[in-house]
Structures are given as C-alpha cells and as structure tokens.
Image (cartoon, rainbow, N blue to C red; front, top):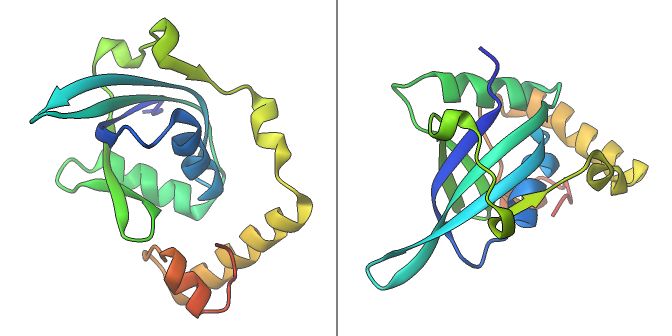
Length: 153
C-alpha cells in the first residue's frame, strides 16, 4: 500500500502549510506536494485540520520507520516538529485521500525543495549516520541534537 495522503487533526493556527512541509522535508521523511488547512472552532479556539498530500517519500530509514508507524493501527504515529512539540498523524481516509480547497490549499512544486544547500544536506546525512549508529528508533529534539554536537538546529 502506497501512502499518498496524511492528516493531522489539531494544528494550531500559528503553524503554516510551509512550516508543515518543511518539517517533513528537513526530517528526511517526504516531499509534500500540497497541504490543505481547514480551520475549525473548538472551545473558543481556532485550529486547523491539515490534509497533506505526499509527492515522494524520502529514501531514508527515518521515512521507512515513519511509514511503518503509520501502518500500525495499534500505535500512534507522531512527528516532532519543534523541541517538545509533536503532532499525531494518521493516514487520510477522508475524501478519497485527497482534498484541495482553493484558498485553503498551498502547493509545493519540486523546485520548493531545491533551495537546500549542499553543505546543509551533508550535515543532514552526517546526522542520519550518527542517529543510525547511536539512537535507533529514537527521535532527537533540537536541544538533544545540539547537546550531541550535531549543530543542526
């Protein structure tokens, strides 16, 4: 089963579609082709449901592990996006897995992902190697990566 669409149920309005796409890309999980943020009101607060369309999954162990967590319905799949902040993520089974609504949808052409510098990409690869060797199945947060001298964040 190829997963092409994901959903995050409770995204605070301060987080943009660009922010979410960058989280997936910078963590070497996926290139996102579009994100639709549908706002809703809950207990006098505004949140959004994010519908994320995947263009391509990264060819990395972290992406493979993430996909395996998504497929396991007995466990919650999460993505850490900053320090101790994370979102629970699930496979989107609504709207045939796709949803684009005019002003609520942001699209990300492949050129969006070409702005990464070679130096930054090399740093990400070094971090991946370090993670594989020392922290299998663990996600480092920014302060942890800095403490280990990885200097990513």
